Length: 106
Image 1 (spheres, rainbow, N blue to C red):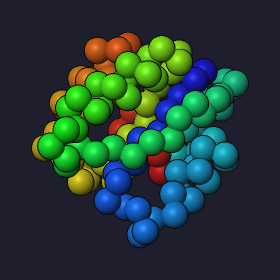
Image 2: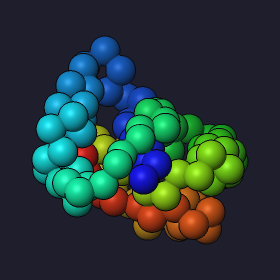
Image 3: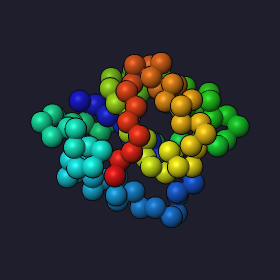
Image 4: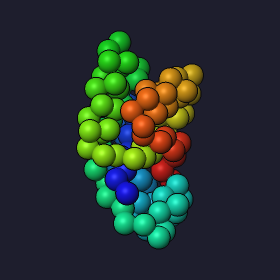
């Protein structure tokens, strides 16, 4: 299965993203659903939901991920916490490109 991970750009310089990769590599936490699957991380990107161009930029990312065959997107807890008021909107953007959205990585 092809997946992507999106994290908040505001964590740059604060978070190492090691928690996301540890959970992915150990197939634990939110990634435990892949215990019996071949998994391919296709994209690791930063969300800019707080920017004025965010809607168009997220559509562009969703379109590219869809074209690459990504089936699921894991939103880092950082996005879910940072943009709590926009989580439904962010989910819909990706779901419109047939990408299932999972809230959380670790």
